[in-house]
Image 1: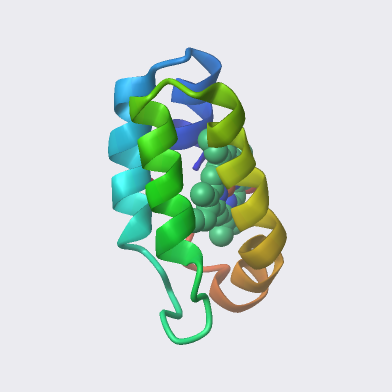
Image 2: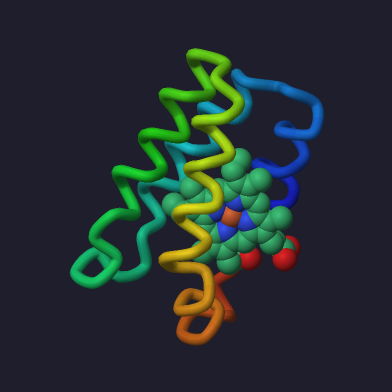
Length: 82
Ligand code: HEC
């Protein structure tokens, strides 16, 4: 997240962001429970391709709001490197 999402966001590197979001969409640790994970990542990827900053950061905060606490609680050992 920090290296491949937050860093390119800081640089407004939308191509890298689109790729990173595509990867994140494949890293859902609980497909049965985290049912919006893929959609939020795909929305992030689409927003990156369109260079829509507001849409992009809204995908960050919606995913973090829904899943980050649970992820940290249950999958702490599996940090998202993408
Ligand atoms: C599909 C879900 C999802 C999306 C979209 C998402 N994140 Fe995250 N993010 C997570 C989860 C889950 C964690 C906690 C696990 C971790 O830190 O690897 C996290 C953690 C982070 C962290 C903390 C990493 C650390 O080293 O402590 C940062 C920074 C971050 N995200 C930035 C972003 C930014 C910026 C965006 C949007 C451009 C974004 N994320 C979009 C799910 C997402």
